[in-house]
Image (cartoon, rainbow, N blue to C red):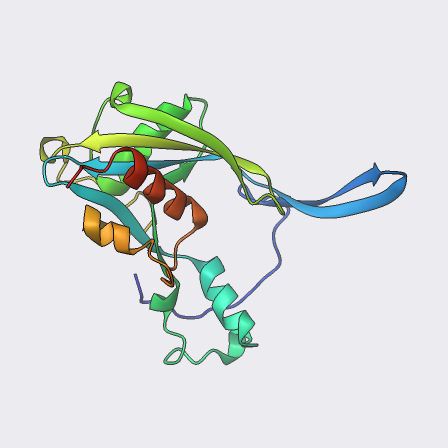
Length: 211
């Protein structure tokens, strides 16, 4: 995952299947305004709890946007990156199992596929519970994300599955409840998106086993 070299930037192609930038014009209280936006796919994310071993199942992966955010905040340009000072591991994030909605199937089936492809658990859709829908990236995309909850067992694990598909490189990690709870303590710094923290807090409040 961390064997990353030859970092460079380029223009966004007009036919990108993932991101389409545009400018939104409107009039508010008689004043002309505009806002630069991105059209992106809606998505799903899933809080997964292995009830056999009482472990939360998360994923880790290298995120170019996070890496860019770190180096650009220090004023570093792509051609001048000190890979010792800025190793790729600084942009490996811990997240919920998740994926974009890019197929003509139900969102719960999208969630089921992601659970299998990323984490290696094969469960039927009726064991995946929809929790809440919310908007992410409200300043740039306003895309909708649906949070699901799924309980899995060791018997659901498919040895040959997990870790992503095609050219994805995903590590599956497990945390017990108390380890996960520490990720939400005051002063903690984590390389995770808000959806991860929201999903984790939802689980701790609503489904975590009582100790």
